[in-house]
Length: 153
Length: 153
DNA sequence: TTCCTTGCAAACGATTTGCATTGGA
DNA sequence: TCCAATGCAAATCGTTTGCAAGGAA
Image 1 (tube, each protein chain N blue to C red):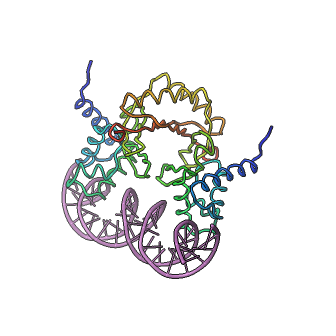
Image 2: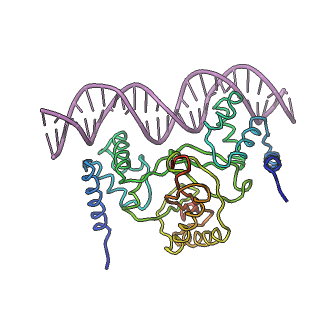
């Protein structure tokens, strides 16, 4: 059984729509376009990168507002790259648990999956470490650093 | 055998001094004070937090320049917190390989160690993942997220 | 009508930089 | 003496916000 990208994205949009509906947040064209671009991106994107893609359609300030609304609604996750610039991607409940592979040269970020057994072990470990430090563990992030193909040559 | 904190810090400062000397970068009072504060901090600190500590001694702009010089010299590592604000700490070759425990409520960051056997496994895994994605692995970061004691109550 | 959303411009906060001055080797 | 380091003020850059206009319910 094979789920192609388009169908996957459609399903994702539908789930986003449901969540927004439940929260009385409108799923406007701009919001939909933003989610769609991010769903296809394969890694977190900056506001400026999104602005390049959505070009004339959306002024930067509106894009920022869109991103904030979607983040507050739990639709997007925000992280920060090596330069401290915000990067957005569909939230974990939409994309599934995953991590980031970062090129230390050019900063490109790509989503990656990690073997479930290792995830399990990391979770267990993380739990213990947090407890020892007096924290209640709520999650973890693994960032793999490397040099991508184009920077390597 | 027990190495106390002061001696440890002194040793760290000495190693920093050697590195800076080799690179013809002066180890001025401000730079020394900055390294000293960070060596004792137990986690990465923002420029503003450092400025609070070094108060009158150093204007913010000079502190930023100091941080940049030390980072360029490989003495400090820079990361970014959940708000995207830069945080500095002594580089890995000074502090040893470690990770961060972050409070998702207040943003406090604390250094943590991870069991060597898990580190080994993670490194191996990371290596493989990077290779599969066409990257050359250069390192990794694990960030443990939790709620600290004071935010929990 | 009543909110929510959008655009534009101005404001913000973190960080950087130009320039004149100071300080060390 | 001479280049590096510093202080201050102004500039930058990513991001946020006030306010008036446009749209959907």
